[in-house]
Amino acid sequence: MKEDTTEEKILAAAKHVFIKKGMYGARMQEIADTAGINKALLHYYFRSKNKLFDAIFQKAFQELAPKTSGIFKGSLPLEEKIRLFVANYIDTISLNPFLPLFIINEISQNPDRLKNISGFMGGILEMLSKEIAIKVKAGEYQEIDPVHLLINIISMTLFPILAKPIIQGVFHYSDEKFNEFLEERKQLIPYLIMNQLKKQDVP
Amino acid sequence: MKEDTTEEKILAAAKHVFIKKGMYGARMQEIADTAGINKALLHYYFRSKNKLFDAIFQKAFQELAPKTSGIFKGSLPLEEKIRLFVANYIDTISLNPFLPLFIINEISQNPDRLKNISGFMGGILEMLSKEIAIKVKAGEYQEIDPVHLLINIISMTLFPILAKPIIQGVFHYSDEKFNEFLEERKQLIPYLIMNQLKKQDVP
DNA sequence: TTTATATTTAACCGTTTGGTTAAATTAAAT
DNA sequence: ATTTAATTTAACCAAACGGTTAAATATAAA
Image (cartoon, each protein chain N blue to C red):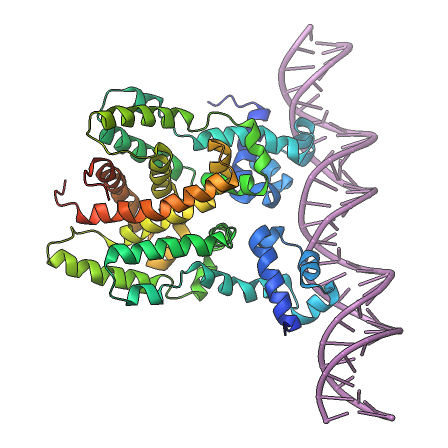
């Protein structure tokens, strides 16, 4: 038995509709319907569309930051950490595939929204930097800008999910085939990244 | 002296506004203003917003497919081809940075639009496949799914441009610093890709 | 039970927006 | 010069949408 407050139902519905349709594509009526209430009550809880949007945007943004506390704190080898990170991230985002596009869109249209957000991806970057620095000193890894490294991982992980309908259309991938494709990338991406780190003959 | 037809001015204006604001965010009035005409004349040339959108969408999509005929037909080493491709693609898309997001958005909201498009990226994929197959037989490259390879290149090239405002916000990159960042990637991406191809000890 | 709060119903308002229309004006074609 | 087509002006319409309001009803708190 769920014990959902009306406000929680509204926020859940709003997040769902906003993420799928965007700030301007979303309709207050549809949010009310999804929450199982009417428009008057919706405005009774949140005076305006903007207020409601603000209420869900930060939460949505947080969901884009992968939960990596467990993974990166451990003492596993880096390759294993990256493997876990990528697999975890693909699975998480696949549950909410419209989320990345939504965030990118809203930030693109209104970069000021970033001002309320802090420390995004900061944890991962810090741990990545430290781990690499040690191995570089030990001569095991070659030097690389951790930002490029992080962006490489995120790009190869997120972009295919973002461009899913295009990839499916262009390569004629069924839903099953596309999922296989993503599964393969869980191996491929960490492998590619580690190759770059370990390769000794710098150009 | 430009010899622009009114229809051409409309199409240029429509492409510009649609790409920046999307199908639903774009306003017919703004398109008319951008074209330097009035709303009545706009509807005189294109009866509806949908007709106008259809008229520009295919063109916009074509622009997303990099012009690679020259690059991939030559007999340069693959690494050099990829280097040229990435540099060329980054420069082209940077001139129209809203284009990829626009295409992904519209296809996401309405995948049927893909049905009118054919052969997208097909050329590149074919040449890539052939070139790799030869080297694999010769024992120089390890086997890899060309689709993954292409998606890796595209991901690492396009995603940072797509996520530009987020990257700038999160890492506090100025416009100049971000451009440097992209310049660095012109070297980094081909290097990473070739490492993957050449690495001999398969896991 | 009484009181306060939550929720519904249903009508309404103002603005924005895509689209139309008719008449006037300008430019081009014959 | 006359006809045809292109362009402007300006008013207008209908639908969609965010938001409001007032009254009725249900629910929970006191």
